Length: 322
Length: 257
Image (cartoon, rainbow over all chains, first blue to last red; front, side, top):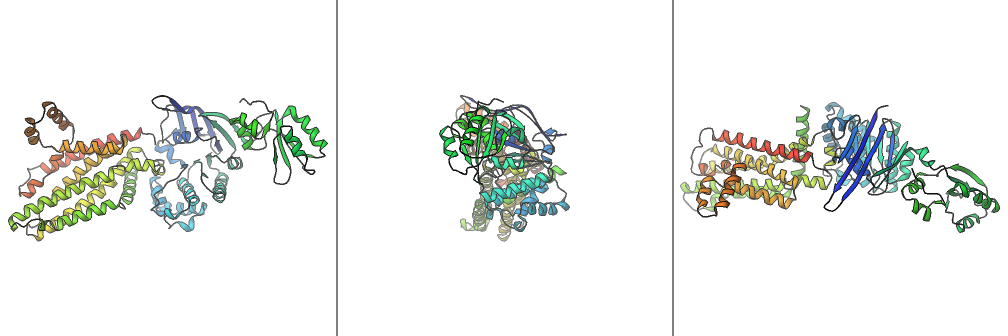
């Protein structure tokens, strides 16, 4: 299958008088067409830098990047890409429809197709009834949805979304997430950079974790959750309301599920001890599987294993090396 | 053809964006008043009144053009970068050169439109005061537009490589040095240190000859221009603008956004 994004030893270094800042270091990435790729990492990890390099907004210090087989930043590559920046600023004195018409013309979309494209995309993001409204009257969520409509106006093969739900309230986040799901179902290749791990988890097939400018790992979601074979997650009942305190006293971190069940992730060697304590407390184990239970847990263990061990989710696990 | 279409779209966006600036209307309003009431600034008889009216009005138009050009070119692109409104544009299938050219053309269209309005007003005022239809005024306006075109291009270039106070002061300095006429340099040569005069002479070789776009004296004293002078100025101005815009596009192409 053809590659939508390909980077080779891609680096971006910012030099100041005293030191060099490695915003991105030797990134090697190959994302196939049709994939929905989640790009996660803490603030300052290099996510936006990588995206800016893909879009030709900044030049690499070294290495190569190609988008849809073309040189990144070239008009040919940009023709096939839709892009939504982290914070989207538009000419807010303009009406949504007028501004979209300008951008559609810049994309060289035939004049007779522009109106239909505008209508279809505004409908997709739920702004079809607002097309005559000036952008300055839009809420943050509406502006973000407008940005998605704009990124889709050229029928892109690849959609690059940089923190699409940044700064949105839960309703706005859900709306944007639903749009991304719809786009995924349409078969568009999506590169999604996000802080919201739950949203990445629900829409992405493959996840890339970046930290301090370096790629920590790239895996299919299922493989990523299961990347540490020495760790198990178990779900168990809490009928007698005692087991939580017993395990906590022993240093295990327990999470309460919405349905009243408890969840614990622990190293393999602790399993027999945990089983014994659960049995003694007359509780029942309802599920047991290898690896972490969600992306958030995995992310913490990959990025900050020390923190994860001390105050977060997993317990007594060995330091993970990928 | 596609490139031209994209340049024109960006130019239109630049017009729509800048036409809302209040400074445009304030400057236009005062320049309009200056021309309309230029006759009342003098109590000479009709023979002496017309040259003074032409002098005041043409100086006013020139000053309006310079201030307006500097004000709109000053930080138009740095502002777009700062506010990130540039992102949705440069991520479209265009080159950075197209963006620079489109922006430049859009803003120059605004400058030109305003100078044409003021020029038309001056022609009407002169007609009312008995000068007839003075066809040198349109030539003066075109040369004024070219002068602003060079000034705007320089301002645009400097705004891409330095902070805007420095860009503004450098542009004004270059404009003043470029505007010193050769006879004036000769006049200064005995009064200023030789090194300074040599520096001015060398700078004048590279800098645009802004003084050649000023035909106010010829209009005021009803002299004719030398044959081919207007055409020479036109070609010279356009060539100068083309060189600076290419430099600006080249600079912008390497700029991290």
